[in-house]
Image (cartoon, rainbow, N blue to C red; front, side, top):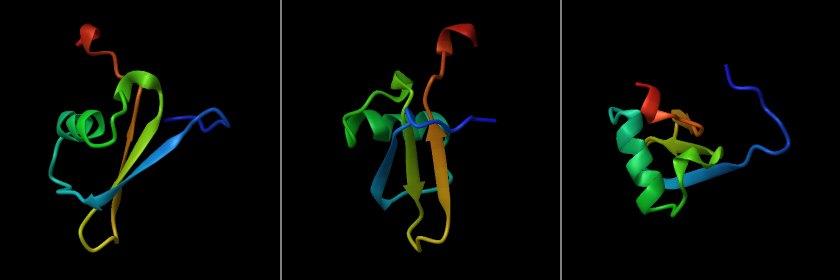
Length: 66
């Protein structure tokens, strides 16, 4: 569970996104299109083509512990 706070920023990716993408694939979109680092602590929100589903992707992912 992700606690919401006033310091949390949301970035909306406005283009249609394939919801079958993994979180690693979405992180690539964040890095290239939004020019943001997913590990910065911001949350990115992706929408599908019909705009009736969304997929939030929260930062603070530590890949070194995997």
